[in-house]
Length: 250
Image (cartoon, rainbow, N blue to C red; front, side):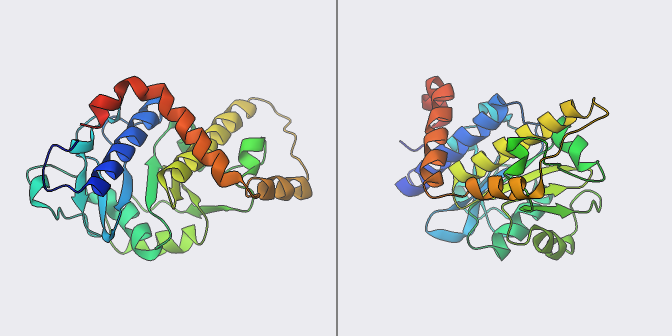
């Protein structure tokens, strides 16, 4: 049920799904106080997006806390007036959503391991199966300061290219997807890959698989049937917070 009569059922369902994603990001400890964002394109409204009400902790996010905004981060619905959003934080998201019609969900994180890998000269190394998923399939964007400049948008889009994920140098991680389950799947694997790399770096001798094996593994992650695996994983993750559903869907 909705808390506002103006919100259509399709949008409310999207709000519930996005609120659940915020809580799962908190469950897996990928939050940074009230900073970072997850955005989702409103179904049937490609020019509008849902994003968090600024100041609400991710583990307490509700469907009614999400705010509908446009490409510039401006609130577009009367029922969202009075809510506060971090417009500056949407610069990255807005650029990608506007340039890539195939991307409906964008996740940006500032985890310690993600930032650590973003600060390493060689970036993500193929040290684990998780990391090999992104072999030659990962964008890199140079740090330009806090993302406040609209001029940075073109460079962000160009650096992401046709990849699903990107490392923002000296900043953090970013994943995208045509759906919420896909974007969650991508950030989960990218974060795990970074965690494994930071742990492995304590050794002075690292073992790297051959480029042939890395490429084969990356292709295996995109084999037929992977979409069902991603959906199954999403549904499994939702069971971790199923006792919160009544709350996050309010």
